Length: 230
Image (cartoon, rainbow, N blue to C red):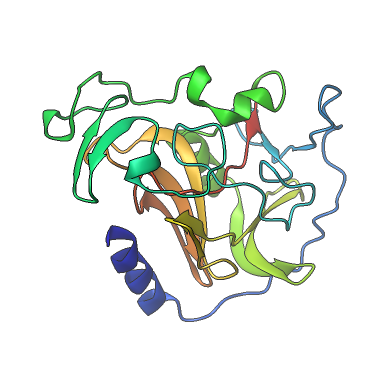
């Protein structure tokens, strides 16, 4: 329900979009020798490099795989009954068993950033991880974001002053047994817990004409992951 209201609000303010015309095949950094992952240098102050593709994809416009927050494998069903770090009784009564800051949600451990054992990006290459909320904020502050298409796939293009750009396809999200809003919306996990409501985590989300970092849906949803390296 939380995601439904977000989608409605985003749709109301989306008045149009600017096509992205940048060349997404500009040379970037060399592929990682361990896994052939390609990293894009956007000239960010932290020196963080962003992956050219989503985890599970082999091209920037491919959707790739979907993961619940803190899980490292894909599933057939994405809901609380299958979520790794909770016990659930139906859709409304749940007890979180890890990454929780509120007694109202279950066992409190005050962990707010994914540990390496729960970070699916760690296995991609040495030094690779899921971006934190701060990484996403730095990316948006250091680039110009526009809705556009790459090889016919809609998504967001983020272009840096150095001329390099990152394309994030609108891959939708996995809820229950369904893939929702693919081609229309993008949902990208961060590694940061949403502490005000710890049944969720921070995400970068977008649709044509609007993008933001916030709390959308639930940790049990399957969202895209774009890895970073530093």
